[in-house]
Amino acid sequence: MNKITEVAVAISGNQFPSKYSFHKARLAIEAMRDPTEGMIKAVTDHSACLECGYDVYESKPERPWHVMIDAALEEGE
Image 1 (cartoon, rainbow, N blue to C red):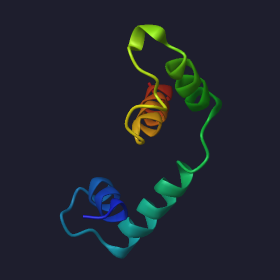
Image 2: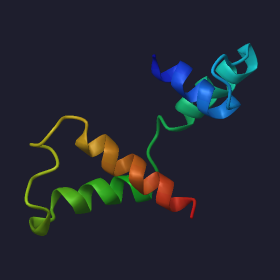
Image 3: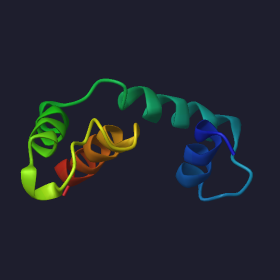
Image 4: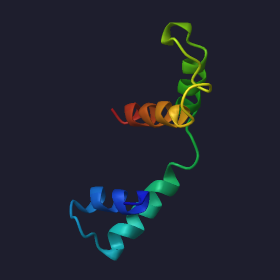
């Protein structure tokens, strides 16, 4: 399943999302394109964290993205 379909399913709550759900999924993904200051700070802080036991940039390539998305999710709480 591609990411647009995955997001459309999550938005619609239906295994077979409508065209409108796909449209909303694209908009949601586009909204994540530019990081917030909090997302940038999180990945910068995490990469400098000696307690974490690894450099965020030298671990898995997707790790900085995960750190930034986690920060974005925390912004909404």
